[in-house]
Every structure is written in C-alpha cells, then in structure tokens.
Image (tube, rainbow, N blue to C red; front, side, top):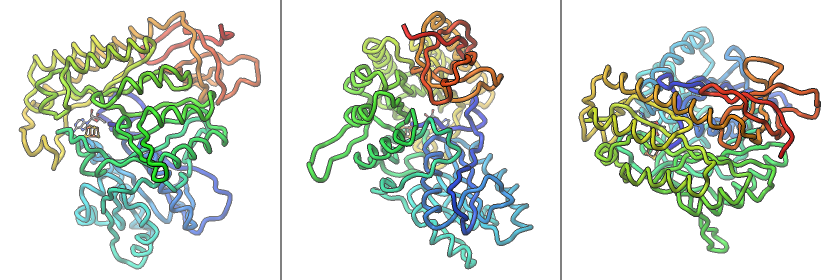
Length: 475
Ligand code: 5AD
Ligand code: SF4
C-alpha cells in the first residue's frame, strides 16, 4: 500500500499539508484552497479535483483568506491522521464564523469512513465527498451554496478518472505522480483502505501512457506510477482484447523516452513478479528502488494480518530482487504492536529488517481502525508504552541500517536528477539517485546544470539520510 503520512512517522515528507498553487492564466469565478493529507494517492487526487474545479471556472489559491471554498483531502489510515484533520477543521471554523458564505468540504478517506456522520460531528462542514465521487463536486458545491448540506460517498467499481487531466499543484515541473489504479482488494486486517477507497480497479492503459507522454513533452523528467498495489494492475484493451499487466505497462512507460525516469509505488510482496523485476533490470530509466512493505517479521502475526505470506517467503522475495538487481534499494512499512504481538514476534521483525538491509522504512505503531477485520476479530492488547518501545527499537535499527547502506555507497558514482537547492545551502543542489537516495552536492560554474538535469555524482560522505558528494564526469 502507499505510504501514508502522519505525525507518528519518523521522517520528513510526513503529515505536512500540501497547498495547491498553480497559475491557470485566467480570472477564476471563485477560488478554492486545498490541503492534502496522507498518501501520495491523496495528493494525486487533489490534482484531479483541481482539474474538475478548473473546468467549472474555479481557480486555486494558496491563501485561506482569499478562498471561497476550503477543501481538506483527508486520510484515515491511523487515528492520529484523523485528529490532525479535526484540529485543522477547528481552525477553519473560526474563519467560517467571520465569513459564513465560505464553504468547507471534507474529501477523501475520512469523508468516506464517516459519511454524513461527519456533518453531525463537525457542524460547520458543508460538503462531504468520498474518493470516487469527485466528479459530483460542482453539483455538490451548488447544493451547498443553496444551503443544503451536500454529501456523496458512493464508491464505484469503475471510476478511475482516466479522462481527467490533472492540474499539477505546487509542481516543481520535474517529478509527477500518475495514478494507474484505485482501491484495494487485499483486506489486510489492520487496514481501512479497502473500506474507504473501495474495490481495486485499473485505469485504461492508453490514458496512462498519454498522460506520461504529455508530462514528458511538458519537460517533466520523472513519473511515479501510483496504486495501492501496482503489481496487480490488469487492463484488457477493449478493441484488441489484449491483456496488459504491470510489467507490460512499466515497459511501455519506460519506452516513452530513455530520458524519462520511472518510479512506482506500492508493491505487495505477494504480487511483485520476476517479470516486473526483469523489466526493471532491462530498462536503465526504471529506478532501482522497490517499496516492499513487510508489516511484521513474524509469520504468526503476518497470518493474523492477512498478509498471505510468511517471513521466509518475504525473505526469499528480497533475495530474488537482489539476485536480479544487486543494486536495487528496498524500503518497507513496518507496524509495531499489532494485536497479540509478543517479544519474540518483535524480535522476528528486527531480524527481517537486518536480513533485508532496508535502505529506508516507514514505521508505525498499530492504531486500531473501526470496521477493519482486526477491530472486529482481535483485541488491541499491546499496551501503548510497549508499542512505543518496540517502535523506538525498530526506528533505531533502521537508522543504523540506513547509515550502513549509505556508507557502502561512498566512492560510488550515481546518476542524479537535480530537484532544486539543498535545504541547507543555496550553493548546493539536491537530487535523488535511482535508488531514491537523497544526494547533496556543490553547484559548479556550469550554468547549464539546473534543476531537471541529470548529473553524475560521486558519493564522498554520508549521514543516515543523505549522501554528500561532488559532480564528476560520467565514467
Ligand atoms: N495502524 C498502523 N499502521 C497502519 N498502516 C495501515 N494501517 C495501519 C494501522 N491501522 C500502515 C501500514 C501500511 C502503511 C501505509 O500504513 O504499514 O503499509
Ligand atoms: Fe495496502 Fe493491505 Fe491496506 Fe491494501 S489492505 S492498502 S495492500 S495495507
């Protein structure tokens, strides 16, 4: 599943609201302000929402004060994610009291989970829209403007927004997300996503290729193909009846141009195939990085989680990845303190981490979500302080693994896509290598080297989060 963000997570990129800014070159009828929380899919959905609103004459603004409509695109993955949104709604409520005509809409997973209950709980919310109902937003806005509370949380078996060209919000013009499927059929016991995002469905292959090609033509250098479980992508062309699986899609996107980089997220260990791995290997522009959530290293816990693999099976998958692509980086999602987890289970998780040598992990304390299989079947019986302690141990181990893997990279030369200035100095660039590692290096006096350029960088020093180096000539 995709990486979700909230403040329980240990690293940046998390929980920060992302506010749309884009110039559409015309004076909009009304202005909307949108904040996105949670996974990359939500951020990508906000771009679809912006496109739907744009067609209706609405324009985005970065200023709440200028907005006629405020939207929160929400996440339900952990309780904390929902708390963050509720806090934000309290802040918006104050603005609404001064400007009652302004409308507040809750979109996404929290809207889907709580449905019209949200209108009762959060009195000043006017619009509630689930992830499959964004096309009805203009109509719902009309209803809300005429004083009716507007709700649409219908889930769909078909909706993929395939024909909608996303309006890129806050884009750097270099990296873009392209959604290739929606929903999830996996029913992991802890996870609310199958309930909030509905059944899995793949997007029309032609529309994905057209969007990627268009991004490339606009000058984008990297696309990330998004889905809760990209490896189960499956599309049958209605004209030719030819089936397309994820490996085939990946190959077609890679063939758009050797200078367009491809990433994807997320892979379920049970579904990623050798065919995908070989496709990755045979295309230099498909990044050598796989996000492969393990969740737990204990077979007993994995069974309770309904992950459908054992620890041995997972480790064999990691081994296979490294056999086919020795330079491939792997990251994971890990949950500490799932129902009935004991010290041995926890040790098993630490052990799988050591054996897998993750470059990076997203680590969470288990948070029971209403309606999930785990909430129905099991007791959330690991005390909070035990969850916290185990999470700390997991984070500590990951920090040392990250440092170790970064140290092994010292002396190596990587192709890096420059994304912008480094956070610390305007005299340094920041970019990522194929393995998704952040690299920071001094600018040179070659003026053609700018964000969006590929350069070769030799890693010379590192921290656990960054490789520091210098630009070199390709060898
Ligand atoms: N509690 C804690 N973490 C969770 N995740 C999903 N549901 C929960 C939950 N109820 C984590 C999983 C998933 C990642 C996106 O979020 O690790 O892969
Ligand atoms: Fe990911 Fe499992 Fe949740 Fe599906 S049910 S989104 S595979 S964690």
